[in-house]
Image (cartoon, rainbow, N blue to C red; front, side, top):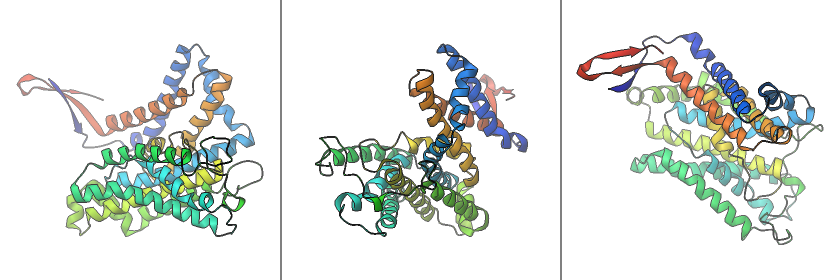
Length: 362
């Protein structure tokens, strides 16, 4: 006996639309069960986790700070995934973008100019794109699986950052802490409003989401992404190059991840240190799928996932739980998103001995 998935001839439009909402509801239900097992009041814990962080102006700014890198990375990944190129290494591209974008304020701290900040953003994008070019080259040249290569490069980037801040880039006046010199004022990404810490990275994220939505909706390149993602053979018949699409999607997603990296360092941290991300590059994968790989939907899903970070921090203090609770919520959300999509688009079949097939309605 074996289990097979058979694609449904007709898929309910209603269920396809509400699938992310259903996944979110299931996450809340099972999250309440998790809190119950931890000995915490389920409804009160969910209130602390998802409602309380939205009641103060400063926490709304923090929500925007955490949502910005998630949205930036996820909109780039959505183009990769829709073109059937599986970039799993955005966390590494985020890190390299932060490193390359920090070259000017770290190595030339005496340079004071309005041009330093735009150059940092551009260098961050170039660094992220260059790092994403490695799995793109390996795939197009040697037919290497980009999932494995992009993922392994994440750990190389993390170790490289750790070596830099503990070695050649360490601040000699930093009391032996593994940090670089603090960025000069001209190298710090300005805040949007005076009422909180939200900076221009959130604006970058919104602009990127709208621009890529426009590309997918109205431009030939967006049509190429969709066609090659659904059928490479059909794309070749139409004259579209799958190799060029690998390069386009990987470089684009890497550039946006690099922009997210240098924006996070410049706007939120102010220097390089061994840990600059709580896993934004991996969480952005959840954001992309929860947003249905639609750049506009990713804005909403990015805010939801940012809330899990913010709520996790609030829950650690109010409920005295581990910071791993946020990761549990994120993992459950991805699991339920993929499960709902699978059961909506496919029918489960049990294939018995003697070629007898029993369908299980799902």
